[in-house]
Image (cartoon, rainbow, N blue to C red; front, side):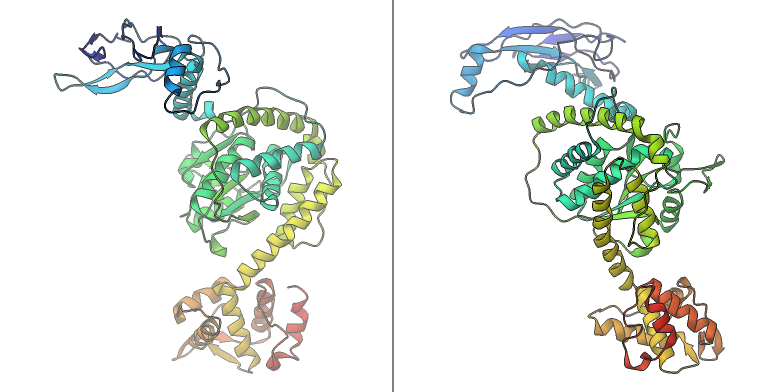
Length: 500
C-alpha cells in the first residue's frame, strides 16, 4: 500500500499531497502524546506520515478498553479541569476522502485527537466499521461455553435482557425469549417455528436487533427473497431476521414451508431445503394471508421510553457475550433431550399447538415454564382467531351461509357480494367489494363457482357444497353459526359449532 505524503499548513493541520486507495482494514498508526494546558488546548500536529500497510486491528495499537472515568459536567470548568489532568493522543487510523489542490480525489489519514484514557474507544469504532463490511464477524456468537445455573434462571436472564433492550412488557418478552431459545435447537426439532412481528417500524427494528443478540447464529436481512437465501451459509442452520413489510405471497408460502423439513426450493442452481428459524417484521398491519404458516405472531405497541445511550449499549455487549456462552452450554447439554422431548400442549388448536410443542420441548426440567408458555399462547391464539373471523374470507362465508339458510338452492356471486357489503356496512366498514373480488374469496375458501345462467356464476347449494361451507365457516370462526333465528335448527351449524 503506498504511503500518504503530508504537509502542514499555517494552522498546524496536515493536508494530503497525493492520493491513495482507501485502506479497508484500518489500523492504529503512530500515537503522539501531547500534554495540554488550559492556555494551549490544542498542541502542534507534528506526526510523521508512514505506510498504511499495517497488521489488522487487534495485533497493534493501544491497550484494551478501560472503563470511562467520571468527567465534570460543568461547561465552565470541565474542559480546563480535564486539560490539566489528561493527555491527548493523536492517532492516524481512519482514511478520509479529500480533494487536493489539483481537484483530484484523494484519501488521507488525518490525526484524530482522543483523551489517552479513551484510546480504546477509537479502536472499537474502527472495529465496528470493519464488522459492518464483514457481517460474519459482527454476528454475535459464543466465545466459549459458560455455566447457566437452572433453566429457570437462564430463561429469566434471557427474558429480562430482551425486555430491557427491546423495551417490551413482560408477556411479550417472555414469548420472544421462548422463541429465541428454540433457535438453538432447530437441528433437534421437527418444526422450526417462525416469528411474525407486527407494529410500528422503530419498535419492529428494535426487536429484530435484540433477537440478533440472543438467537443462534443470527443474520439480519433486508429482503425476504430467494436471491438472499442463496447467499446464506447453511452449513450451520442460521436464524434469519427479515425486515420486510412488503413481502410477496410467494415468499410467505416459502417461509411457511421452510419451517419444516423436506420442502425443496429451486434457487436457480438446484433444489435446496431452506429449513430453519426465521423472524420477519411485517409492518403495522398485516393480512391473514400474508402471515407464514407455523408462525408465532407478536404485536408491538409504540413505546415512549428513553432509548439506551451509546455507553449503555457497549455495556450490553458484554452481557450479550455472556448470554451467548451460557446458551451454548444449555444447547450442548440438552440437544438430545430436546430431540426426545414428549412435551404436549393442551387446549390449543392444531396450528398453535404445534408451535407450542416445539417451543416447550426446548424448556428442559421446568414444567412451570412450560405451563406458562401454554397459557401465554392462548391470548395469541384468540387474537389470531379474531383476525381470521374479521377477514373478507370469513365475511364471505358468513354471507354465503345467510343466503343458504334463507332456503336458496342456487346463489349467484353477485348476491353473495351484496350480502357481504350489507354485513360490512353494518359493522362500520366503508369499503365496497365487487362481485369479482368476492368470487376470488369464494374460490380461496374452497367454494368453487360455476356458470348458473345468463346472470353469471354462482354456487349450487347441494349437500356437499353446504357441508363444505359450514366446515370452512367453523375454521374461520364465523360468528353466529347457530345463533340466528333462520338457522336455529340447522343441524350442520350445530355440528360444526363445536370445532370453532
